[in-house]
Image (cartoon, rainbow, N blue to C red; front, side, top):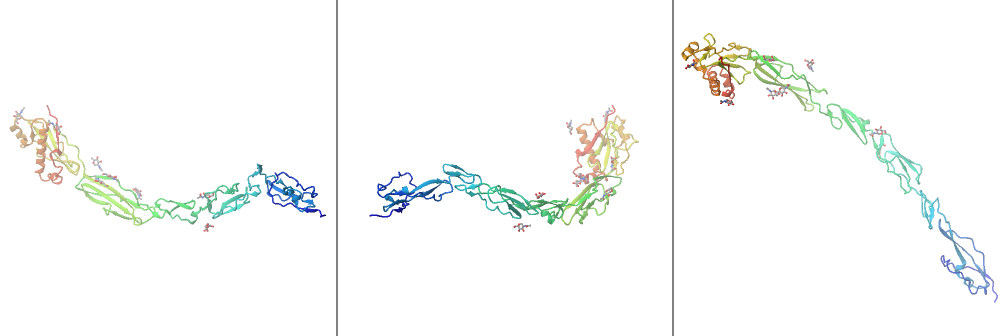
Amino acid sequence: MMTWKLLYFCMLIGLKVNLSVAIHANTWSACECEWDSWKSWGECDSDCFGNRRRSRSVYSYCDKFTDCASNDEGFEWQGCNEVCHNGGSASWFSCYCKAGFHGSCCTEVVNCGTPDNVINGTRVWTSTSYGGVAEYSCNIYYNMTTGDPVRTCQDDFTWSGTTPQCVFAYQCNSSPCINGECVNLLGDFRCDCHDGWTGRLCEKDIQPPVVVNCSSNISINATKRTVRFDWTSPSFYDPLGNHLDIVSNYPTPSFVFPWGDFTAQYVATKPSNGLSAECAFNISVRPTPCEELNIPINGARLCNGWRADYGQFCMVTCQQNYTIGAGDNSFETMYVCGASGTWIESGPIPDCLVETESVEEALIYQPEYETYSFEGSCDNVTMTALQHLYLERIVSTGGFDELCTQFPDECVLDNVDVKCGATSR
Ligand SMILES: *[C@@H]1O[C@H](CO)[C@@H](O)[C@H](O)[C@H]1NC(C)=O
Ligand SMILES: *[C@@H]1O[C@H](CO)[C@@H](O)[C@H](O)[C@H]1NC(C)=O
Ligand SMILES: *[C@@H]1O[C@H](CO)[C@@H](O)[C@H](O)[C@H]1NC(C)=O
Ligand SMILES: *[C@@H]1O[C@H](CO)[C@@H](O)[C@H](O)[C@H]1NC(C)=O
Ligand SMILES: *[C@@H]1O[C@H](CO)[C@@H](O)[C@H](O)[C@H]1NC(C)=O
Ligand SMILES: *[C@@H]1O[C@H](CO)[C@@H](O)[C@H](O)[C@H]1NC(C)=O
Ligand SMILES: *[C@@H]1O[C@H](CO)[C@@H](O)[C@H](O)[C@H]1NC(C)=O
Ligand SMILES: *[C@@H]1O[C@H](CO)[C@@H](O)[C@H](O)[C@H]1NC(C)=O
């Protein structure tokens, strides 16, 4: 039977089974098989390190391709695109991409996307691809606080650094400080207050009244039982100019003082903030002090040791066998330091210079000799006796007893000032 020699295609069933040994079928010759030429190579199946295939047909008088050869004889594989793109380097059929490219064949460009927006600022960028640069700036009156003004698109698909923040930095433009200097801060402001003001906006008045010419303490030597004294009132003012209320315990800066200790007090209060200032000073009025009295020879001087600055009351006593002369004052004479600053019954007090051998003789000179003489030396016993003598004397004498009636706590034995004089032999 005569048949036409026809063209047969292989059944493309196999995968890349290049390794099978190509063997012509036994009927190759009987069927007069003859290869057609290879077709051109097909598409490469990958951008890099792929494979491509070509096929061929066979002319034969028989019915099937397999009458000539096994199916795998009808096609052939070949590696293709054996490179990495964009400068990537190949290693064992895979690609290591250069910075800025990715994908298994390095065909894709790294892209960081649109850089983040910034509030109250602007952003511009050259490109969102690898190496692209984004630049941020803040609107007028806004300062950049955190973040980076320049960011670059990196190989890991991110922009370098962090998104900046723009913060309002000119709050002082609205002059918020009432009594102070405004300092701009980031997103805030600070008021540096003028003297006398405080508070966030320097709105609170903390200025107390100011006192000038506050008198220092005064001491006055009176020459009478009372003394008129004029002084200068202190002045008060508020540097901020507010009204002040001033009160004093002395309505006028003038007063007739008795002897004693006084305090003049002035208080200024500022009604607008309740703060106040005070000026207080002491006025001490005393009788003018007298010169110190002498201490009698062979005798003793007895004085009040308390309240001596209000007045002094002194008397003389004599040691046994001594007395004062007849022409001198008597033992009953009180030497008084009055307000005038001089001793009434003027000093010096007489010494016990008249030596006597008997009481009788002594009485000729002074009838009170026995009461006012003391035995022996000026020892503690004698001193105590003299203190007793002094207290009895002043308590029983009108005018002097005031020292005890006015200051009973101080009118005690120990406060009587006893000073014994020298002996003449
Ligand atoms: C700043 O941003 C805020 C929030 O977006 C906006 O309300 C405000 O008007 C902006 N300020 C200026 C001066 O643009
Ligand atoms: C804001 O920026 C300006 C210009 O750099 C600067 O002079 C000013 O001190 C800044 N303000 C603050 C509050 O940091
Ligand atoms: C304080 O006293 C001085 C001297 O007496 C006087 O010159 C001055 O004016 C006084 N100041 C006030 C505020 O009164
Ligand atoms: C007056 O003296 C008193 C003490 O007696 C003292 O505390 C006060 O500060 C003095 N005042 C003046 C204005 O010197
Ligand atoms: C008062 O008198 C004493 C003693 O004489 C004297 O030291 C003092 O300075 C006087 N004081 C006044 C304010 O005159
Ligand atoms: C002087 O004044 C102060 C108050 O200013 C008072 O405490 C003190 O007792 C006074 N001194 C005399 C000796 O009066
Ligand atoms: C001193 O006086 C006493 C009597 O008061 C008398 O007994 C005595 O003798 C006198 N002594 C002398 C040394 O005179
Ligand atoms: C006298 O009194 C003083 C203190 O007041 C004391 O120290 C002294 O020992 C006393 N002397 C005699 C002899 O008692």
